[in-house]
Length: 208
Ligand code: ADP
Ligand code: 5GP
Image (cartoon, rainbow, N blue to C red; front, top):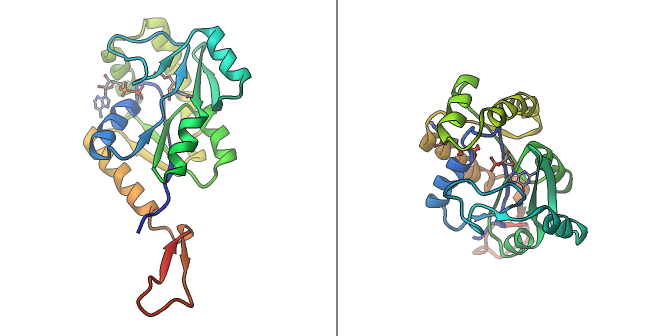
């Protein structure tokens, strides 16, 4: 029985481990469609065009905005970030589970359009560990790190706009919890229709 795809939105402060969790989730569940955002942020060492992001200059991003090509977009740390609409719509239409890893502003916008989505908020075990993770990643200047720490506190205040909190203490355990949530969400009664007048051999419930 195929249950229609879930829309899963993952947010959390920068450096909390969203990318790490998504990478591990993808290894376990390669059937999930991970949306690739467009951004005007320059690539970090090791980031690949079309894998981590679609890297755009400001002008091309603004042209995409004018053409209404984004499901949502936001300005984060002085750069544009946006979710291209068409790939997400196509993946959902084909029944796939779709993951958007986006910031809180973007998640709140998606939530208005898709309240049936599953909203996950990843938090670090502590603020000290958050700073240590951003520093260890080694991709940001001290000024950017301080900006990211400041924004973390503001973002954490939005925790209750989400359905689930994932404390990223040990990566694989955090991913276990995400996987369990996805499995449980596939069983919620709202996703099924009860067949009252079927033949005796027919299923009693079918996906909506
Ligand atoms: P985000 O995508 O939320 O900005 P990243 O996935 O880039 O965060 O992780 C930030 C840094 O923290 C990376 O160096 C990553 O290897 C490390 N990290 C992620 N999760 C954990 C964890 N559970 N324990 C220790 N380090 C972690
Ligand atoms: P980073 O520069 O660390 O890759 O991402 C910075 C922030 O931008 C993170 O909180 C990340 O979730 C968010 N982000 C990435 N892609 C998008 C997007 O398409 N839309 C929005 N609103 N935020 C995004």
